[in-house]
Length: 289
Length: 187
Image (tube, rainbow over all chains, first blue to last red; front, side, top):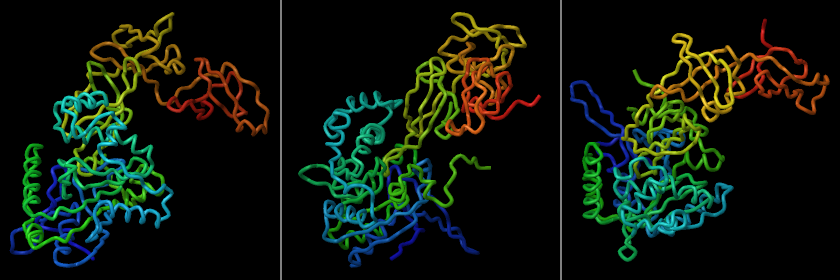
């Protein structure tokens, strides 16, 4: 199945910026539209309408993300399994890798907390902000005081923990902090998010959740993301009321995952450059005008 | 001040009261997390290489460096001496600052000297230099075991691999970025 690239609302994320365009037709004012950063909201509406398990290969667009490992447009293979939880879906992702003839060993699993403990001797959930700042300073972050807790954790994961993940070759990082749950449900006992990411050679390949189905909590999270956006100097985005209405109608208990197909191709081919797997890579060094 | 798009290889920044040149720059962003720019920088004073990471929205101070063509005069025990051809002012660079550019320095030739806050801190050779071979074996024609090249010592002390047909006393053009032989120098 296919869901639209163009929509009047975009997935609401503090750190993912949609590209914007407009539908123009003679005699009518332009209709602003966003290009999708992820097919998630549309696919969940289909799940709520009774689609059953669904998958899609979609081109997505993320503004401002260009670099050796990032192309502003890329392809996600996204699928949803009613009746699965995140642990079950991880196994299916591992099965997919094996079916593709992956040269990597079957991915192992490590929690976010254990990865930080092993790599940095740091408890990411309990350590006070000052301790995170100190580790960040040592790892070369320029102004630790300018970042909040999640920003410090993002930096420490990217710069401090990634080399450890790279050593593990193929690994699922599981149980993200509750503050970074995105659209995953939070485990009430462990107080962490049922969210996982696949890393191959230290490269982020896939992001998956045991999906949050509670419409009120989802609305609260969207509003919190908008507050973070404003704090970061970005504009707030409109909430997708049709998506929230679908959650009201009832999203089946399911797990979902988005695999970066370009990233997967990079890992399978042994390259760390996205340009190597892209026919016409975006060139971020070109100045406009 | 430089914004994150301007943090590119070759840009020179001031961090911790020191001038650095960017030797690598990467866009770093966990999928749902904040964007950073991670730069690998080389200290223009002592050659030390470190990594620093900045929030994408953070500005970085541009290094107050200037480049000036100066003539290389001579070397004494500790310093290499250069002269500004316009003002006749002389500057001296130490071993750390000259680094391995030493092997491309020919007396009387001009080189780009970088100054920071008015003090000379480093020298950059031109992309190609013409040097005379002061020592090398005649080379046996057809000797392909050594890759059809032989080592040759230049007047500056640099050792460059040259084709077997090149002889002692000849002048050759060398690529200073790779240290490789390019061609015989035309008269």
